[in-house]
Image 1 (cartoon, rainbow, N blue to C red):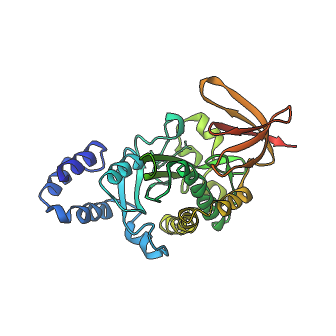
Image 2 (image 1 turned 90 degrees about the horizontal axis):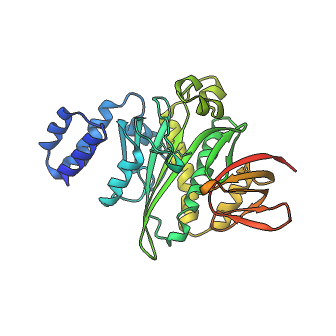
Image 3 (image 1 turned 180 degrees about the horizontal axis):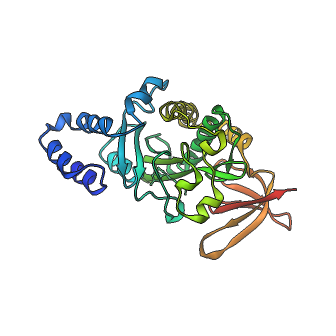
Length: 307
Ligand code: BTN
């Protein structure tokens, strides 16, 4: 186990050969604390101790791994989940070098943003796993609102300000036939960044950042603590299977319902219609031109204006 985790951290370029050698000398039962200690010394701004100073949660964020750099916090979190990391464990990196977005797209993660993954064990059937994306979107939007911006959610999982994307969510689950084993929810939020911190011209034209909106940086440790609190509140409803309350919150924050949408799906297929609602599985319900209602399970959504 020790050799394996050190190897992973090396592979992901989280630690140097030198630190790996130091960790190799540490007793198994002190390894996790030593990794956290190492991380605490190395990160510039985001510090697990500072987050925990602001934290008002019961389970989410009781264990936080905060690294200066990683390929992808989702990959690290999945590894830790497979090694029995507990419900609510958080993995953060100040910079990601091989971060993943939806549909196998790259996700630019320069220093200044919030790149985190949560390990969740909700004890629910696999059919409920995708709803966690909505839960997370609600928490991101509410946190952003509390920092003074008008955040809205575009189905299924983008958080927008004035139509520009500020946050994305990548959910990856592992389940048996009847039960979710774990869900890793990765959240990227463009906080203390400028548009010019990004390289891709297409990305630049479609995003905004909290700094661009507010004209100043925010305290990222405070922001993360607030997000984890908002998340835990909705996650508690999810664990209690109070899905209707979650959907109601989502509907209020939605930028999609009440608009015409174009959904691009796999194999170049498209669906067009008027978004009328969302169902218990988190599917978008659209009314097509002939009045027929269609259930959309997945796809990339573009909003096209109101009726
Ligand atoms: C999207 O395409 O909108 C989803 C983007 C998800 C990015 C986050 S950043 C933290 C976590 N680690 C990853 O590699 N991806 C997610």
